[in-house]
Amino acid sequence: MLRELASLTRREYLKLARNPQAIFTSLMLPLLYLLLFGNGFTINPADFVRPGFTLQDALNFLFRGAPNYYSYFAAGMVGFVAVTASLFLGANVIFDKLFGIFKRTRGTPAPSAAVFGSRLIAGATQPILLSFFVLGLALLFGYIPGLHGLDVTATPSAVGVAYAFLAIVLLAGLFATLFLTMGILLDTPQTYFAAVNLINLPVLLTSDALYPWGTMPTWLQNVSQYNPVSLAVNVLRETFFGTAAYPYPPEIYLLGLLAWTVLLVGIAIVLVRRALRPTE
Image 1 (cartoon, helix red, strand yellow):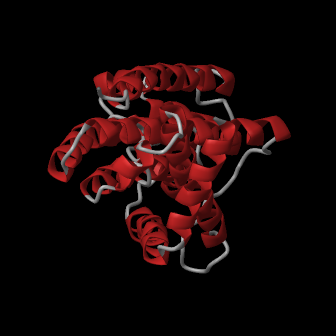
Image 2: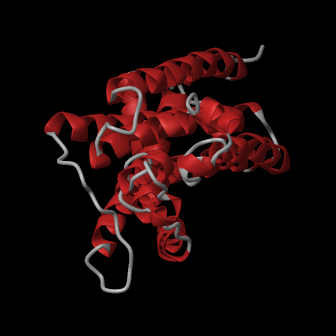
């Protein structure tokens, strides 16, 4: 099984390497978000200062301790990209079905676990790398005159950096599993993208990846606390900006994210095993 998994994973990486246009397009989207949306949309926390409510109180209220909106947004973009970069993973499976490629792969001696696992490993790699690309760009922009950048106000420890890395990996793996499973279960691109939009947009819009925390209504804040994107982003923000504005340490958010991942992977294993079961 490991031999088949390694061979199929290598093939998936080769397919990705032979499509530089897709890589370029994937890089352009987060770049445009960081340049246009992040730099064009600002909120001045000083406008929220009142007697007995200091500037730091306003930062904690609006941006969960981040020094400005761009820093808050840049950390959220890492989670945003981890989700959106996984979208086409399932679509690739559907197109492979239409062209007969997926059927030929299933006709090999490779077990269904290797077929699914190879696409999951290769598919999750891209959003993970894109997330770190976004993080690096956001830090770099802070050194370019005229642009906002990610201002790290806390001193990240080795454990904190490891937590942030784990949060990105879990989030990318979670949504790569979800979209890959949908691609295996569905048969037409139209149905797939309709289902993806039904999941993708509500998940992102009920997270605190882009919305300033303090501008959310209370009900949305309550929903956001259990959103897997918010859980991952909270780990990053606590690493970059400190834990003062958060009710829980990063370990709690990681455990919540791990619970989401285990649940989704467990469901995916059952559904994919049934879908890839050999027919008589």
